[in-house]
Image (cartoon, rainbow, N blue to C red; front, side, top):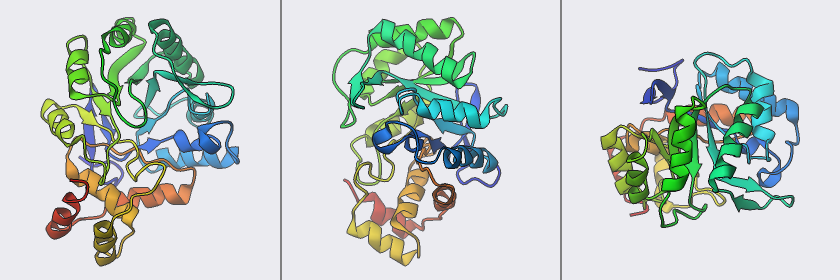
Length: 288
């Protein structure tokens, strides 16, 4: 099934379907994901264009800004379209200097859920991702106490579905023994392939896999093979990298972020790029 011409169609997450091309709101905040945007009106316009393009999957967090992206989303889109689903995260906060501080105590997680609800203007959050690892990757250890808090809030009707972010396969299994998990959000892209086995596992189990840093993260993807394929296809390397993710597995959902309407449209168009078999084979070798 397709939606408004968006590439990749939709993927079922819990009791609703998300467009496989989503939107990550992180870049709407100021530099370093801290403070207000340079142009608030432009940020509002980007969010409204997201909906106009038919994207029904927005990824955010109260610690973006902090609070900035959630407040922008509410200002731009509330009351929300019936088909729009907002996915948020808990497990971190920002200090007064903008540093990222882990915040995973059960009481902190409850507060964060209520803060997300209030700032987004919602009675229940569609999906809450529990962020456990650092940006560099997962950290070993039990995540049961944190998942149990989210399961309790789910039973209270404040959370519809639980997701995980920056976790291992073992942590996913531990969480699923406590409550259903509908998505995993880990660092993954064409050149960062350590989670290949987890992509396969989640696909078999019907769990969405949502790669963050789909275009490399703080430094763009660099690959001679990627550049070569992009040149042959008369496309940009970014377009090829996004299209590769959609080809990689049907359970992969994209959340590329931008603060530009033009770039947003480019991302949607890029994801529609068809990759021939020889290009896919060449790209598949990157990062292995």
